[in-house]
Amino acid sequence: QVQLVESGGGWVQAGVSLRLSCEASGRTLSNYHMGWFRQAPGKEREFVAAINWSGSLTTYADSVKGRFTISRDNAKNTVYLQMNSLKPEDTAVYYCAATSIWGRGVVTTTSYNFWGRGTQVTVSS
Image (tube, rainbow, N blue to C red):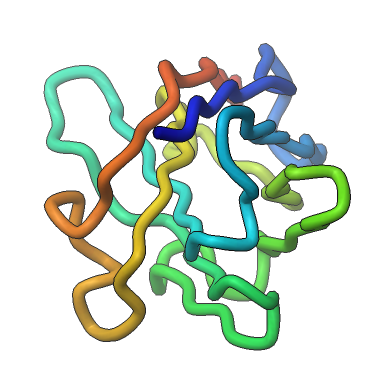
């Protein structure tokens, strides 16, 4: 079992940056590939970004490519999501998740075994 806790969300104006953190406990984070997802009100949870266990591979949703960066520090058992040039459409609850699978399935929620409770990001225009 691994427990995940997100932090760093908040209310910001469009154009600014936020960095989300996801700290793991219970098991070593390097055992897992990690993903960030988000869910806006009335919408399904959607993939944002993922990073493999070592940090050598990343993948992003087209909607955030070039603006968001996922990274990890296995020594700190923490994964990050740097979000730049935020837009109102980025408003959502952001979740981090852990998976043992790396491949095309990394973009689907069903590939992930462990989830955090989420952190709210609100971007105003």
